[in-house]
Every structure is written in C-alpha cells, then in structure tokens.
Length: 241
Image (cartoon, rainbow, N blue to C red):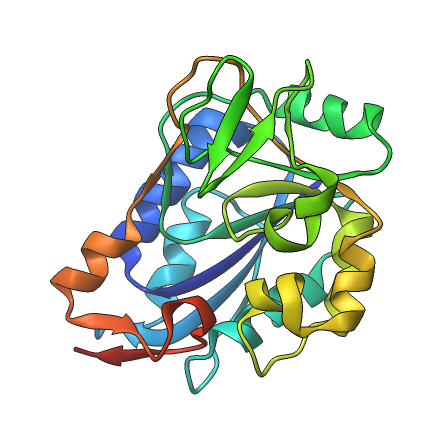
C-alpha cells in the first residue's frame, strides 16, 4: 500500500496533468490512498472540483479544505496522516515525463535500510554524478547519493519522492505549521534536523539521462498573477502580483 501526500491549490487543470502523468508513468494499478490538502487560492472553482479530479485517478481519498491558505500547515497535515509503509510526497504542479519502475524504487529502498527516500530527478544526470542545484551527487552504482556532508542541506526537498513511512512518521510530529517546511529540514528546526541526519538520501536515475520531471507551477503562477509571498525560499502562502 502507498500513501500519496498532495499539497494543492485551486488549479484543477494543473492537478489533472500531474496526476495523469504519475498514474500512467509510475503508479499504474498500485494500491494507493491519497491525502489531499486544497488551499483556497488560485481559481474561483469550488474546491470539491479538486477532489473530483483526484477521484478520477485514485478512488481512495482523504481531503482537507482549510479556510485560509498556508503551505506549512498543509504540509504538516499531509505528513501527519500517513500510515503506509511507502509514502509518495507530491506537490500538485509536477509532470512525470518518463516511465519509472515503482518496484525498482521499492526494492532499492528495501535493500538500503538507512536510505530514507529516492526522489525523482529534475536535473540531467552525468556518467559519474548528477547536478542538484549547485551541488553534485555521485553515482554509487544504484542511484545518485547525497554526500554525507550535504544531507542537512539538500538531502530532502519538495520534489516528488518515494519515502519510507518510518521516516515520514519520525519527522511529522516535529514539523512546525508556522514556517516553510523545506527550511525546517535544512536549518531552522533542530528536532527535524536530528532525524534527518540519521538517514541517507538518493535520487533515482541512470547515468547520462535527461530529467524525469517538468515543473508546471511557474507558468501557472505567471498566468494567474500570483506569486509566493515574501522570500521564495521561506514562503508559506501566496499573494497577487
């Protein structure tokens, strides 16, 4: 069984494109429960439209529609719901453009007992390393592994990732609903960081390969006159341009 944790805003067309790609290229007929948070920002549609979009792809859905948008609270709520052995973290604006073997992801995580997650690559992979922002993860023969000294900074990010449920549940109670969740993994939440440093982190892929993911969110924000409020790195909500 897999839990898919989705933090979404009211952009049903983007969500549909995301789910269509992940259903077709990753999950196929795998048993899935979706935990969906719909923040009330974006289009004027009824938030239940987003629920219907998810139900078109996955029949088991638990959802939340808060009165105010808040990414930090949405993230924490999703992570607190999980009970499955395997958890897939998925924000609503990613397209999976190439097939991924879900069984291979699971097998690699099972083989490596201290490997917390495998995320899908948003970057080109080289023969010996994969660029992740301005860092490089070496190829270890199975996956691109985050170097030990980088685990606190770039071991976890919000890109689509298959994560061990044990890791999610070790982190979730310590998350604050008041600050950007990614930054809590990096430098502003000591309890979260203490858990982060117990694990290894990897990126799925093979040498000499194009990215597996396409970002759908930036174009949508421009088209709808929205932006992340304040610092993009530390944001928790949105505002009109």
